[in-house]
Length: 366
Image 1 (cartoon, rainbow, N blue to C red):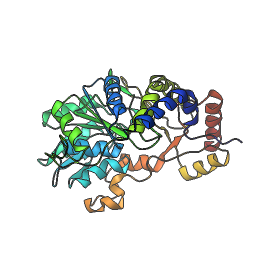
Image 2: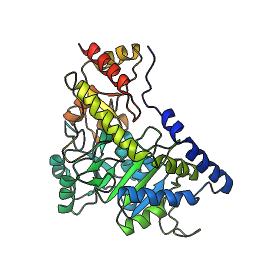
Image 3: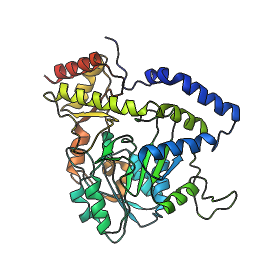
Image 4: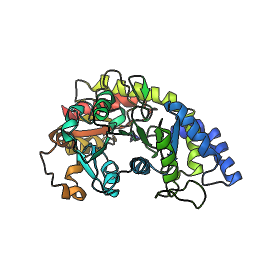
């Protein structure tokens, strides 16, 4: 049978190609490939979409997290509370600054940081909380922010998978001190290369992040702080400006596809649940199954690709071995890592394809 695309970028490109072509040619014509006018235009549109005062574009989602933590002056000996069930960049950026990731287990339903377990992990060395809005929906920020406020801690949202989602009327990246997202090609809003952005309503944080992304520079050859080379390319900004035109409709389509998947699969396997008051952009559509390797193999045989996000939680990664955390440290995360499986997901999935995937999975799990 015809193979199904795990992510379809071609259909979107065909839809927006005239605008995409025009914007890219404009960059080639003016030649300002670094910090060209499209950067400011994109940041203005993104800030308006999210509903915050400041957007600072950067070179990747990883850089977004790094820049945000640097703006909070996280350093050696500091502790940052975060989730062990995420991509390595979340924990990696903490360690790169000499700080220590303090993992807290996840909620078994949403896969996001469990707010009830945060307070017991806070120590005098805790300097920030870094929740991940995994698989496309925001963490429970009312409860997280409440804990953070009691302890005078900033909260950084890792929104690399949730840009476009909402939480109780607010948009992801507008629900904490700083929001960070990624424009990696497979993300809900993705470029044609790496990219990312930080969002905040705090003027001082915004100033720091703008300086940090250009080597800590506040004006040419004047550096009040250390920074990185973390600028977004102008060509990527042009591409994202074209993609933003269709993004609101794609967010709606992702919601419809996710809801239809759940309708088809609710009696077949454990499907994702969206918390009350939230919406999801389904960066991944992730289910739980037993004997995952066998299920993936059999689906592949009938042309249905799958992926695992993520097979090894961070506390069990060799690079974090010095933390001394073995199996059974975070049982919910470990159980999820053993069982989660992501199905093809993008806003252009058709009903016929969804039915085919659901039927194949039902047959495999029978």
